[in-house]
Amino acid sequence: MNSESGKHRVRAKLETRAQELTERLELQSVRSCYICRTCTSSCPVTFIDPRFNPLAILRMVLYGKIEEVLNSDFLWLCTSCYSCQERCPQEIPIADIMTKLKNKAFKLGNAPVGVRAQMDIIKKAGRTYPLDDFDNKKRAKAGLPELPTSCDVVKTLFESETESLK
Amino acid sequence: MQKEVIIVIGGGITGLTVALELAQLGKHPLVVERGPLLGGRSASLPCKATDRCLKCNNCLVEDTLRQIKYDSPFEFMTHTTISDIRREAESWYVTLETGPFFIDWEKCTDCGACYEACARLGASGVVRGASINQHPFFGIDQKACSCLQKGADPACVKECPEGAINILTRPQTRQVKAHGIVVATGYTPYVPPEKNRFGYGRLPNVITTQEADEMLRESGAVTRPSDGRVPQRVAFVQCVGSRDRRIGREYCSRICCGYSLRLALHMIHKYPDVDITIFYMDIQNFGKDFEKYYSEVKDKAKLVRGLPGDFYALDEGKISVSYFSEEQQKNVAQPFDLVLLTIGLSPQEENPDLANMLGLGINEDGFLRPSQADASAVVVAGTARGPMDVAECICDAKSAAFKMANFLEGS
Image (cartoon, rainbow over all chains, first blue to last red; front, side, top):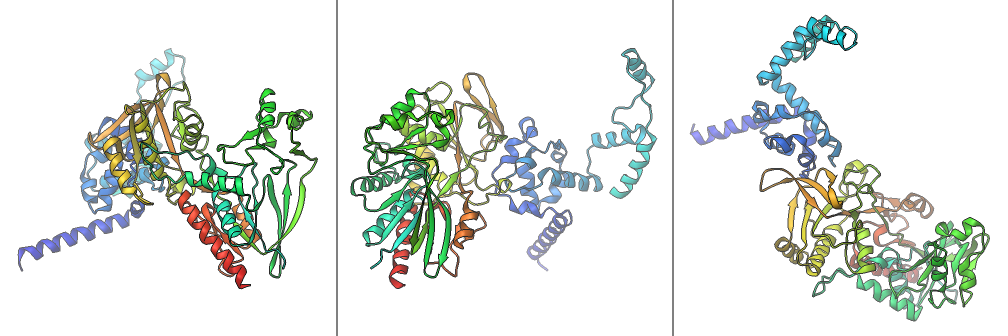
């Protein structure tokens, strides 16, 4: 077997894999994009960090580069503000696609450290910002009612959620 | 032999061209126009020439109107709507409703006494045409008439030296037996909804191309509505009201790209300092010589691929427009003095009713489609069929007249 045909075979395998992944995540709607760039010019994140470009991500998914998106760090810059989805003239659910991609990337273990740390905090305290007695003292001084310092109910919900994500 | 009357619904450029052609073939067209004036929307389109003709073809409308004004080759009725259409054997029985307000165009001399009388009262009940070739040049807009609302005797009737203004208590009806019907009801311009990201209706210097057209026709220049000054930086936003699934208009309006390129060239010729940016998703080249204008605009103005996102108000009526810059590979916000929304063509709201009455179909975009079974007794022409420019409308009208004449000769 010569190396050229081997390369072809590897590429073909990769392409089918990307296609399968796109279909499994139900991202076929990206095909109706006609590159009007409304999503990118409406994106508040692109203003601050041009590495995040919704149109570029959609195009990468369409061209079979979905694994590169899943391995990227820029995917996690999306704030889910839904500006792109609200304005897309082809009604592509762009923000929902970003969420799907993030979920898949998490399953593959590609989530950034910050996201993992956040998850651990919520797992422990049930909140992204854990409360303790110090906070409740401050609240009492301001005349605000006391809040529970732990949220065990959220924890149990969270356990079942991580199970399904695995 | 009995006169073979053909009802032409709509007195715009398409309807008038159909009627002219049919009259020349010895038929008897009757143009029915619901508005007060002939010429429709095409009569207010301005010439966009620079030092040479840009072939926008809007002057062809003037030629048609002039021919009708001086030759009166066919009968027409303004302020008239169709209340009922019945089909019996080979002919159609059409009930027409005129008025209750109308100007008798045979008596009217276009002197303008009615317009002045109405303006003295501070009302705008008498409307004026956009072209001197329009006859009648004046019409009555019942909804804007202040005399009728107050219950007073309209001032225009007394002022008219010819006694051409008719005011009746209820509409005049007339039944016409017709052998064929030509539908040339045209289009409605798209108006952005109350909540839109372009700031139309909220920011004074965001206008539609229709408003720019009227301005160019009226004063000869496109200026800023807020202070009447000539804009330094102008943004054109393409595809507003077309190619958008969200508003149910997935079709391309075809005329807007050519329109923007011509208006940009016209503005650059008039004010060489003006800085024009055209935001587009694709440039669709319909029509003759399009490529030439496109390459000329590429040299003289900035073409940005991608529609802008946000529109914010700045000081002095300026507008901040944010878009993705290809050179810088990031989102930038740029101030503009004037933003022109290049609006698309929408189907008429009455299309479903009309289709019902005449047995026509509606295509997936909402425009009229001739039915297969009875294609020749009812002919659809012009923008009632789909988006097209003035030249295409004239071509379509001529072919429609030919089809109708063929049908009449065959039967």
